[in-house]
Image (cartoon, rainbow, N blue to C red):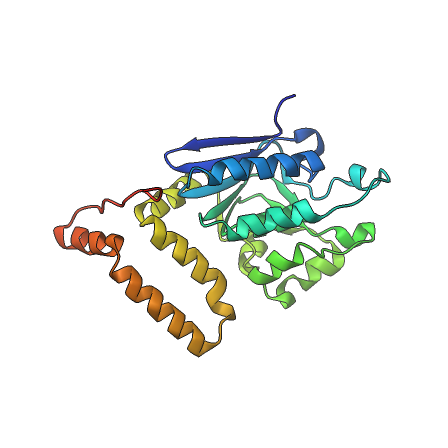
Length: 252
C-alpha cells in the first residue's frame, strides 16, 4: 500500500508531505499514524528544520468525517500528540501551504513555528456548522491569535483569506512563491548554531508565560551558558574574522 505521508530529508531539512488527496488530506487514523511515523524518522536525524507540506488542492480538510460517523470509537489522542510534537520538537517547524485549510487543518498548521501560505489560500473554522466546536485546535490557535481577532471566524464558520490570517497572527508569511520563501527560511535557520536555534524556539514558547523575575533569572543563566559555549566562541571568532561560522553537528 502506498504511503499517504511522505518524508524526504535533504541538506538537513526534513520535509513531511501529506498526500491523501482523495479526502483532501483529512485527519484519518491512517494519516495520523503515518504522520507520527514520519516525525519519528525525521527527529532521529536531528534535522535543522521540519517542513510540513502537502500535495493536492487542500493542505488539510480537518477531521475525517466519514470515519467519525462510522460508529467506531473516537480517540483524539493521536491528533493531540501530533499537535504537541510539532510545537515541542527541538527543530523549528514550518507549515508550507498552497491550498485550502479547514477546521482541524488550521490547528495542524498553527502548531508549527512558522506558517508560510500562498496568496490565494483560504481558511475556515467550520466546526460549529456540523454541531461541534474547534476545541482541541483552540489550544495552538489561541497561543498565536488574540481571541477577539478570531472569534468571528470560530463562531460563524465563515471563510477568511490569507491577508486576514496574517493580520490576526495566524500565519507568518503570505507569498506568491511558497517554496522560495520556505527555502529562504531554512537557509536562515541553517546559518544559526543548532543549539542556539533550539533554545530560541524554546524561549519563544516558554518565556511569555513566565513570571518576570523568573524569566530574567532563567534567561540570564541561558545567556551566560551560551556565550561560554563552543558555539558561542566559534560564532564570535567567525564574526571577528569575517567568515561564516563552522558549527559542530548536533549529534557529536
